[in-house]
Image (cartoon, rainbow, N blue to C red; front, top):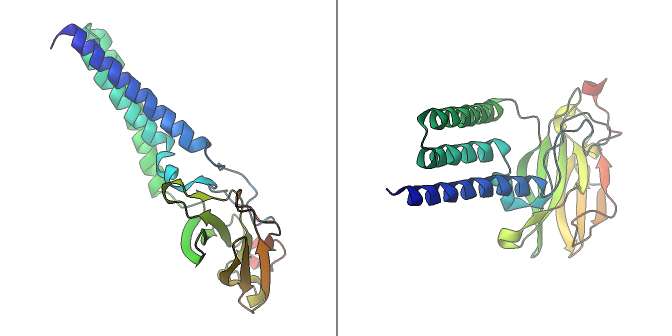
Length: 228
């Protein structure tokens, strides 16, 4: 293969590597998330999950996957373009260490305990929206059930950055008035939420931001022996 062609291929690989990093960054800044000590429950201590933003960008948001892919592309580019053997091997060794470290960290994270909220089920749907439940583990407290709104826009579907409601988990031993029962859409911008005891709240939401106008909080004041 001619040297000029090899260099152009190397440039192409570097461009793809840069694009992989850029996509990872864009997917991470879309919506909100990260680690925090206070979660949607208000009175609980837990790790906050990534939330909001475009739903189908989330699989691309894992930073370790983007790093590993970019490192592999850089190593391939070095093989094509760097003629000096010592420099080529040294650069490939560096990116190999970065890629292996990223993959190992990703593996450890996937095998570790789930500290963030995990999606449980779709609890209500309308032509334009769906309400999904998440189970969020507590930190020195019982977990909670979070209800979040999602739009139904195909590949452009979004999720609200804040929960419409928070109910304490049944394992807390709290009475039925603190536990989630059912939900249904009653209008294009309103949903009815009911506790296990039948108490019902009408929650309105902004159809653009998917945030609630009058959020229901059945976590903060719920009796919780685990938090004592």
